[in-house]
Amino acid sequence: MCSRLRWIISSDWLRGLLLACLLATCGGVVATDSNSVGTIAVVVRSDSSIRLMTRDEVYAMFVLDRRGDFHPIDLPESDPTRGAFYMRLAQKNLTMMRALRAKLVFTGAGRPPQQLDMPALLGRLAADNKAIAYLPATDLPSGTRSVAILQPDPSAP
Amino acid sequence: MPHYALLFACCIACPVTAQAVEMSSETAGELHLNGFATLVATRADSGGAADYRSANYLSAGSDRSREWDFQNDSILGLQALWTPPVSGVTVVAQGVLANDTHDDFRPRMDWLFVGWQPSDAVKIRAGRTPFPAMMDSEVRWLGHARLTTTPQPETYFHLPMTSLDGASLRWRHNIEGGYLQLRAGFGQTDFDTASRTGVSSVDLRRVAAGSVELGGEVWRAYLGGFRTQARVHSAPLASLHDALAALAPSQPVAGEMAAAYPTDWFPVSQVSLGFEYLGAPWSFKTEAVRRSSDTLLIYAVRGWYAVGGYTIGAFTPFVTAGRQWQNSDLSPKLLPSGTPGGAALSAFYNATLIGLAQRRIGAGVRYDLPGGAALKLQYDRLKLDEDNSRGMFVNPQPGFIGRTDPINVLSLALDYQF
Image 1 (cartoon, rainbow over the protein chains, first blue to last red):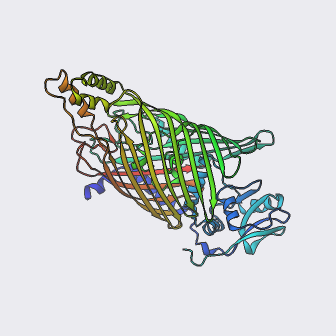
Image 2: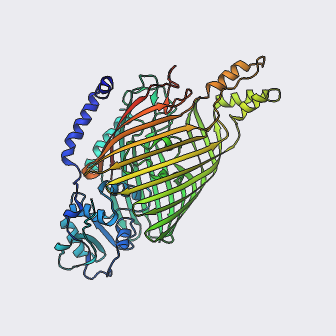
Image 3: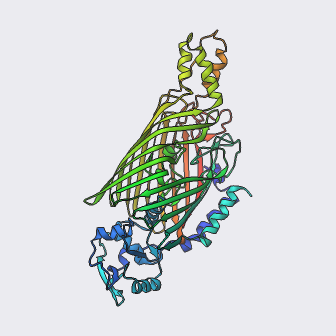
């Protein structure tokens, strides 16, 4: 066992990489407790042609890229609302969503929603009646309306 | 500068500089540029007796041994997706820089196809399209699409091609809470690959592939397969075939031995089964493959793997296992004594009977970094299963084939996509 351990740690390169991994843990993807984010609303501009959406329709637009002529928008991965949104919508954490997005993009099947931080997202919602995004339901800006709601799931991990 | 060093530099630079590019105009449509990069470092404690080759393209063994191998599965890929202003039409070009059969980093145009999607249900692709051979054939390059550092060897190691020059049809039907997807593809391809006598070139013609996939929100089940006519060009094996065929009229066993190395076309078929579950925090995937071939130019093989993980924040620890066998008859054969040249021909034939039976258990962790990068660390313990097996190793030194001691493999990967 000792010789195996020596073999594993015998490389300076490996030690360096493990140290880098350790340091990198300080900046890992934000882990989200899905239920720490309250109700999430899928929102559009008030004059959007979308009236209401089912959960399946939201799934198709944000996960499967069946967007039609609408413009779905993602928050950054570091925003806990994003993690909670996909956990409730698709039972996928950020690692799984990255895998799904990789498959979507690199099979030529589609593209992920555009990613904007919160100020840019609010600006885009105000300017584009084809834009569709998700926000904490308690925080909806004026001039927008909710077309679907995703409630916290008490049974979610 | 070595190619892998260039790739490493790209990997480091990517998170800093690269980002997806989107351009659009009313007359030219939309253009999306995306990329992915994976740097994998692998180390196997074979004691210098053989070189571990887990590569997407099995290296024939350039006689280059590397203590830490950066070339095995490191890859850089760029994709352009053009959506012209024509309803339902897309054009996809995907180029990759990866280690090839000759153990060199070389660029290759992996995909170049026109897609037409007349409805949500139907999509047709023509050109150099993904080879729809197994559950993850289309995403085997993508580090982000898996937990492990490299594609699972027990299934993908045996398929050293990723694209098909031809056409494919996909039909997808949404059913309550899930979907049913059918795929069919037809085409041809050719490639170089490793053989037991050096590099061989392989032609595949009349490849007909099909698959059925049934899925729900967090799971999918897959059944697929293909059938093709294959021809292998290998000068040493063609010489062996011709010499044995000349003896066949007087020595029936020579005819049997010659039939194992045909110089003409022969059929190969494969079926595979797969299942995946992705319901946070658990993930699980398993796949099994069975390839049938009556020759020793392309082995009949079986293999399976399973990998399961549990995500805690940005970390996903996982365990994995797999096993592979050759189904081909590798029993030694001898020409009768007194046959002219019989001893040398028998020795040559029997020297080619090198198997690949192997079992593997492993564990690792994937760590997702901000900005589209992921780090992975994986440990595997390999065991050659039969006396004639070299497993996934090349350049075996005397005594390695059939080695009974397990071999530890450590691999680290940095994945990035934009």
